[in-house]
Every structure is written in C-alpha cells, then in structure tokens.
Amino acid sequence: MSVVFTRVDDQLGEFALRTLDLDADAALLHAWVTHPKAAFWLMQDADPARVAEEYRRIADHPHHDAYLGLWRGQPAFLAERYDPAHVELVGLYDAQPGDVGMHFLCAPTGSPAHGFTRAVISTVMAWLFADPSTRRVLVEPDVRNTAVHALNAAVGFEVVGTIAKPEKDALLSVCTRAQFHAAMQRAAATRAEGAPA
Image 1 (cartoon, rainbow, N blue to C red):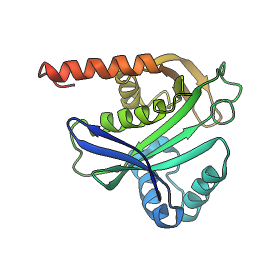
Image 2 (spheres, rainbow, N blue to C red; image 1 turned 180 degrees about the horizontal axis):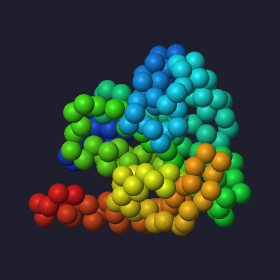
Image 3 (cartoon, rainbow, N blue to C red; image 1 turned 90 degrees about the horizontal axis):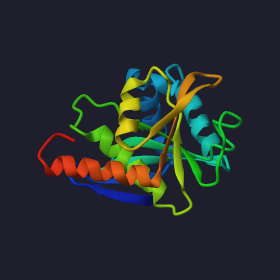
Image 4 (cartoon, rainbow, N blue to C red; image 1 turned 180 degrees about the vertical axis):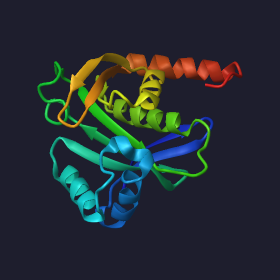
C-alpha cells in the first residue's frame, strides 16, 4: 500500500490517497458501498465477495483504478479514476485527449465534519490535475443526486447535459484545470472574508 498523493486542507488537515489492498480493505469497502447513504453507488445488495470481485476487476482493468482516501491517516473515502473513452462513457460523449473520469464516495459517519465532503472532492480533483496530461475531469452522477451536483459546481464543474446510461440517467459535467483553480481561489477568498465557504 503506497501513498500516491497528499493534500493539506487549510481547515481539515491532511488528506491522502493510497493504493487499495484488496485483502485488507475489502470489508471496509463493503461497509461503505452498501450503506444507505451510498445508494447512488448502486451496490446496496452486494455481498462482500461481490464487492471484492468488483474492485479486483477495477484493479485489473487497464483504464480504471481505485484508491483509498485517508483523512488524518485514517480511511475516510474512496476515489476512482477512469478513462472515459474506454469506460463508463464510451459512445456517450465527444471524447478529447486528456479527459479523465472520476467517482468518489465518502465513508458513512455519525459525526460528519463541516466541509468534509467538499475537502474530499477538492483533494480528488487536485490529485487528478497533478498529472500534467489531465486536461478535463468528467463526472456522470445520477440526475437525482442533487447534493453531489452542488458539490461538483462548487469545484468548477459545468453541466454538459443529461445522458442515458444503462444503469441511470446521468448529469454529464466537465471541469477544466482553469475552472478548478478558479473555484479554489473563490473558495479561499470567501474563507478569507470570514464567510462560510
């Protein structure tokens, strides 16, 4: 298990991404993806073996990978990166060089920290754009997932439109490097003025 990226959030401290250890992490992933709050992950009825099989399939895929996210050294979220020209969005949009697809899932908690989910998506976006070949990040959340639509907008995503996927109607949205940096600067300026970001 190796850490591939770290970011220090000015309010919540250190976040990191590490490679998955499917043997050690399978039970944790199962608890997260089958939790009621993870309904849009579409794995509510999956047993531990199916969850392990799904993440083994991702690990073996040449155009898809998954990482465990840490907050202050403890497992706290899941992040997936994929090539949308080969996975998830094949034939559903006009693929461009430098496009990267992203999914993220925060671990369920009974005592959420204020701003945590936004810090997680900011960390995942910073990780993706740390690769100089990444030009745009794409997401395709369920059209009903209004909470994540608001988060996506907060970090710079612009809605392209609704697309019909086999498992859902999705809101395709795109964020360029410039849009992400501008959104981060706006958030920092808002915090500096003392207003909630």
